[in-house]
Length: 187
Image 1: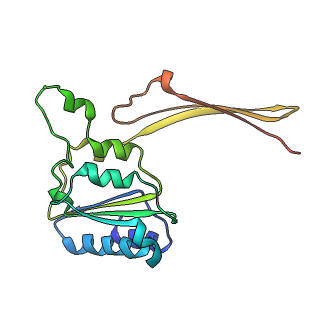
Image 2 (image 1 turned 30 degrees about the horizontal axis):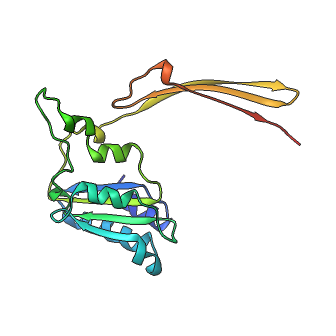
Image 3 (image 1 turned 180 degrees about the vertical axis):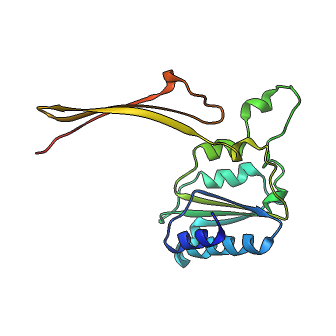
């Protein structure tokens, strides 16, 4: 997705739950951040639903605590993290074969990215740097497949389907697949 697509989506009021703008060029990062800052909420909604954090002054837990909240008298809330490259706990720590209590916590960001708050627009402005490609939650390529059948009955159309998927930390496992069923009837 390029910056023109993001601007077009903002103008159409189509928002993603998380934006992570990074790179050596700060101009586009600032432009996109400002577009979200002015385009998601109207003037009266911003007072209670728009928060700006600076990486040097805050930590990831504080930012995500705000992101998990629900908006007040609005459809969305906007959380903007400027200078995100200075958040000390943004990237997971790597340890050489060591396991301790911190390993159980995982990284707070990967937990949030697994299930983001749909009413929050969270923006990270990570300037003058790029992310290491080895960071697992930015390299996840989930996939899945499934099958289904419809049965015509006197009560209506009965549908039965089964689907499984995988992502990082969640391999294909037929025991964790999902079964969906439903009935469609005319009355």
